[in-house]
Amino acid sequence: MKKAAILGTGVVGQTLAGGFLKHGYALVMGTNNPGKNLEWKGFAGAPPEVTTYEKAAASADILVLAVKGTVAEDVIKAVAPHASG
Image (tube, rainbow, N blue to C red; front, side):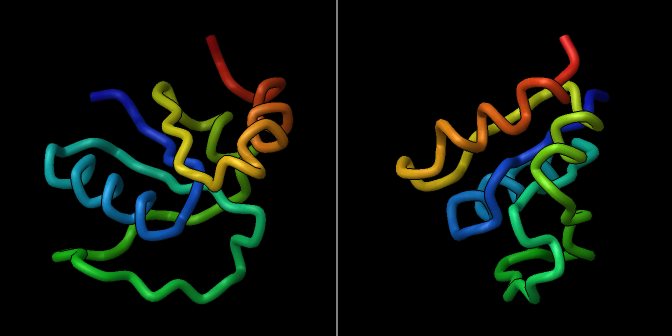
């Protein structure tokens, strides 16, 4: 199974993470502040690993962008050199 990275840890990112985990994907989530204490909602098991956008992109086969539109371009520029493929 391929590994997915969700770039963004807000409500949308967490909802998507729940779906990926439900379907058995290996998952990592990227954020600009990986040390932030997140309030996980709706996870039956342990929440996924949270790391920087760049490290998440480098470790995954599938990237899902789930950030505010105002920062989307900056996140894409930051992860582009790290994304495989």
